[in-house]
Image 1 (cartoon, helix red, strand yellow):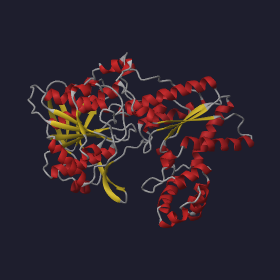
Image 2: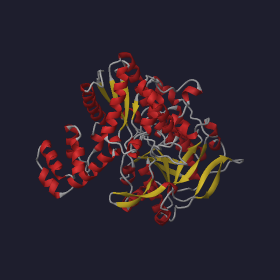
Image 3: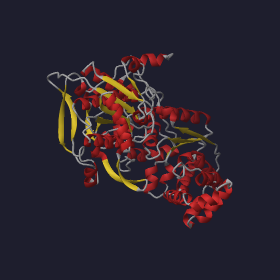
Image 4: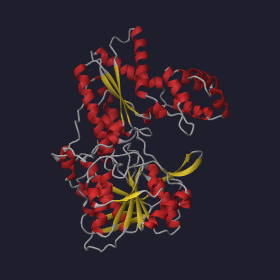
Length: 549
């Protein structure tokens, strides 16, 4: 495969490791842990992996000998920059411990384990993917490991390959599955350890032990570069309002981080919308007000950042979606709407909704009404992710401004443009921060395995300091679990981390947003820098700096 100049240069980059993972390593264990909530229920579900201590790796005085061990790895869920470096970190540490150890990658996610599809990862393969983006080394998938039949099928191939430990690299759901798998194998005394690694660009897998999920840094820097470019163009042409939707369905961490990096005129934070019980009209009125105030100063341009999941955080729309999901799943709805046109389905739906929800639906543009009434996923739920929120908001803002103009409250020009930045950031070449962080996570995972741990997630903390001062270790996954209703039943899951409105990142944003709204305070972060001064190349996110003070 032909390589670009950057690929060749990045292949030679040696990620930095914490002192605790260099040379001889020993284990420092803390006190027993308990889950963040629902302790009795979680303990009952995970009797073999509950209450384990926190682990930290520290320099040892003597080098120990390691037995050869075969290890497997799975990439689970959506891609995130740095995944390949996690794998490289596992491989290098595994081979450093004992060159006779072997390493296997299961192909296309957890399904590769269940279906026995794998490849042995050798130095020739690993070296092709050092410091690269994407998950294309072994591919990824979204198969959930939930059923005993899947666990048994996986155990069959693990025994055939003599694999004693499995690393699952994924987000909150994937690591919950890793915890369930670890408990199952421990209960059966199968002799297979299971370790997780925290991945998601959305940034919602974090807590007191996990400072950030890998990929968040790189994805936000990638989006912020393009937002900065757009803002420079807007400030040059002075005639367009750019409505920019960013990934983040369950939380607004990406939108908030990009706002802190670029200082747009408007950034909507879903968690604030929900907390203040704002309506869609409230959001539209706010944006229109900013447009009008800037127009009064002759500034008929600007940028608006919108989280992907915004519409689900608007209380009235959340209630509407809940009733739609229940209504459209009925036999009556299936029979009544079969073969009907979109307009006919919408009218039928309106006739069967409660008055408040009907009013909410009728307040939306016709196109969005059809999307809500017609587009459903295989489970029968409304496919909210298909709604082009950026276009919905700009259309409603345009109508609001027309009303304001008729009332003599607005005299400017409004020309909207639309963007959705999602896949552009998931497979970017990892920043130095993510390259180092992921390599350290992989090395930690290999050390957890070597020290006989199972049901743990690899962690690296203190990452606002130079890499040598980072602290590596592991946290029991059960410590992060609580019980939540999923698919009609209570299940153990890792609690998602939403944007905290009392947190330092949001407070820093809130303190400046009115100034950014009326003035043009754009920042232009530019592309990710891989080579050059530390203060340019090795910065973590603004979110992490503010959180860690």
